[in-house]
Length: 215
Image (cartoon, rainbow, N blue to C red; front, side, top):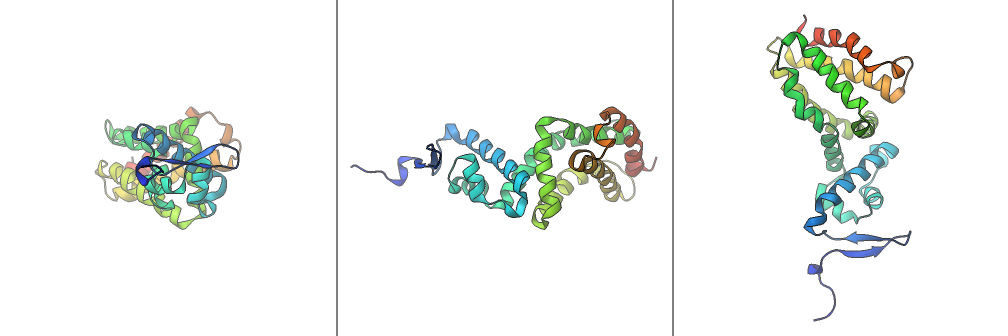
């Protein structure tokens, strides 16, 4: 039997630049690379356009795939954004328990060092910028950000503090660090924007410690 069917695999469609865009599901060997490419494109789109002006179609176009593939891997635009947040904060989620392990009087320094380290790394800074800019300007994006950070990071930290009002303390500590990140990396106010990271950690860690334990 001649002619293509739905089981023949991805179909290429022409793009304006002369290249092709794959339609349908990719072979399994391409899945991981395709998913990563879509996430990379999503972070760039969210960073450049913000959450409201970013569309699944725009993400698909930037990734060189069909919109159906974006829906296949992630679902809605909100779910794409959530996946981007998870990837950006994966290093923090991986080491979150270390904040409350070890001497409790050093928890503030460990938390400060972790957050500043995420922003200082070129690998994680760009997606963080995209996420923060979107969350500041859109309530849906902010809701995704809150759910992930509160549920997967701050509550775990609070659970290991063993102090009264632990969740509030963890949130105050996070607010301190988010404020510094906004001024240093997003707004870029001097001299904070150019200050040595170690100097920032030395000065801020005691304040974060005060929020976490009151000591």
